[in-house]
Image (cartoon, rainbow over all chains, first blue to last red; front, top):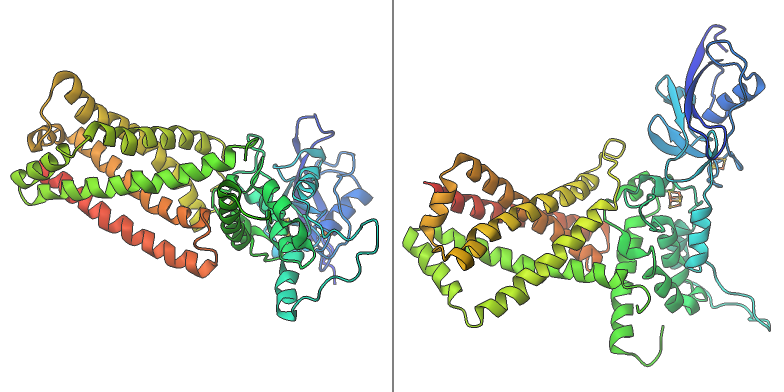
Length: 255
Length: 204
Ligand code: SF4
Ligand code: FES
C-alpha cells in the first residue's frame, strides 16, 4: 500500500575515493512499505538523482548476507553504528543520516576497509589447528553446556561496530579491539584450540593487545550480536595475570 | 615480554595507582581528618608522620617515584584515547572520560600541592602545620582549587580501584563488576567526606 507521495530523505556522507575529501549529498526517494536502509540505497542506485534533481554517481556500499550474519554492511546510521541490512526505515527518524564508520579507512562512500580486524584475527591465531602432516583425528568432545556458551562467542561477524564504539581504537593506537580479544577467549576454551593458548596469550599481551583496553565498556553495549565482550576481556585479563606470572617466575611447561 | 613492554608498563601503572599511591591517599586523608578535632590533634598526627624513620627514603620510594610514573604514563594513556561521549553516553563511558579528566586535574593539583607544602618547606624551611593550611585555605580561590583537587583525586582513586579489579582479572562477570561499582562509590563518598571536612576545618 505505498503512499504515492511519501518520500524518505537521506543525507549521505560521500567520498569518491580513499584519499578524497568527504562531502554530503541529500536524496529524496519514494517510500515503499518495509524498506530497510539497503533497499533505500538500491533505489538510489536505480535512479541516481540527488534532492536537487541533479544526476549523480550511485552511492556505493558493501553488503553480503542481507541477514545480519556477515557484518559487511555496517555503517553509522543516525549516529549509531549498525548493520544497514537490518536497519528498518520505519524505525528510523528522518532525515536518515548515513556515514561510513570512522574507525576504518573509507574505500568509497559508505564502504570501509576492515582489514585491520582480519589482520588482528591472524595476529592472535583465532582458529583451531586441524592440519598436520598426518591425520589429527577427531578432537575431544565438548560438554553441551560449554558448547552453548561458546556458541554465543562464535556469533561474532567481524562487523566492526565494537571497534567503532571503542574510544581506544583510533589512529593513535594499535589496539586490536574487543572482537579479536573475545575470539581468543573462544579459541582458548576449545579442547583442540587450547593447544595454542600460550601463543595466543603472547599475542594478546603483545603490541596493540589487551593492555590497551580502557574499560569504557561501549563495545558490549554496541555489539549487535550481544556478545559479552567485556566479560571476555576481564577473563583474558585474569588469564594474562596467570600467564605473565608463569612466564616471569617460571613454570615447567609453557601453556 | 622482552620485546613488548607495554603490557608490563600498563600493569605497573595499574598496580602503583593502588599500591602505594592509593594507600597513601587514604592515609593522608585520615591524618588530615584530625584537623576536624582540633589544630593540636592535626599537628600531632602530622608530626608523627614527619618523624617516621627513613622518611625521605619512604617519600621517594612510596610517593614521588610511583606518582611520577603513574602521572606521566597516565597522561600518555589519556592522550591516546578519542572521546566519543556524544554518540555513546553510557555510564561506563562517562566514568572512562571522568577517569582521564580527574587524572589530569589531580596531576596539576598534586604538583601544586607538593610545591606548596613540601618543596617550599625544603627550600625556605616553611613550617608545615595547621596554620600553614589555614593560611593557604583562607583565600576563596585556593579553597575552591583544593576542593576540586581533593574531589578529583578521590574520584580517580575510587574509580581506579574499579578498573584495577578488572585489569587484574579479579572481577570478571558483569555482576561482580556491578558490585565493585557500588564498593567504589562507597570509597568515593567516605573519602570525599573526610577530605572536604578537613578542608572546612582548616579554613574555619
Ligand atoms: S564482537 Fe559484536 S560488534 Fe564486535 S565485530 Fe563481533 S559482532 Fe560486531
Ligand atoms: S549484509 Fe551481512 S550483515 Fe548486513
